[in-house]
Length: 323
Image (cartoon, rainbow, N blue to C red; front, side, top):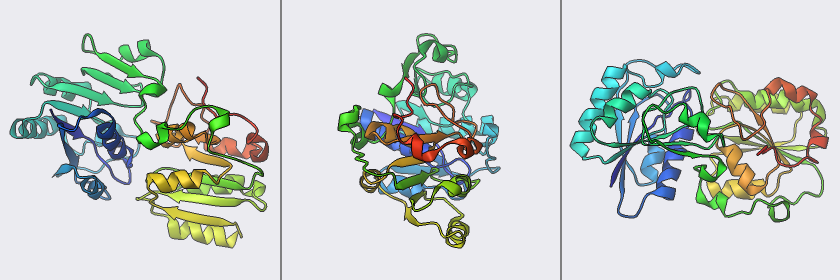
């Protein structure tokens, strides 16, 4: 089969949709299957990352820039233009299945593509939109009926819950019991800050500001994404306030796993990285920093709640997974 993946990336949209689709390919596609990525050529996109993983990409032009939390802008074009572009590509490339991982693609577009006789898979982690698809994947809830209420196509296959999370297979090889966790903590010294691939509002620095009074001699491991734009400003703040830190840029999976082995707590946004940390047994505090970061699986807090949390005592609690 030939799969078309419709997803985008930018400093506003983030990078997670691209990573998730590549992990989907590695988890679900057979060796004889082929894949094609279709993305808008937004500023600060990571199409080069797709090429590095050996996948063909078609970059489409756009009419307007995405706006943070306004998903109607995330296609970069009108619905009619999106449908026309997809129709042409699907016909020319002989596509069998279309995978949408895109908050800006609505059920109207999905239905138009479905009418071409193609299988539609939708990957999402939010619950507020209706979809018209053959398979709906949302690992952010265990509530199958909740997702069925979002499905406008009869007999949609629903894949939900953490067992359907789409992450790199290297994370899933770890067992989910405390005795098998890779984190072996003797003293609470190392905190990891990880706010995703873009962090457009610089929550990395806001987190540090909110916990600065509790840092003492603790070391910060700060993981920055490919599209983080505030590194110089962040370093100035850290140096000025004499905070011990080490910055990590663009870590691959193996490097990130090694880092996790040596930290006591991660404060991170509720992106797919929260699930990766869960499979590794990493203690974590999950923050909701953009509208789409909601979950029935994880307990999340607002960034300002950090001021009221005793970080040192938090390490005594189990993982933040609530199911």
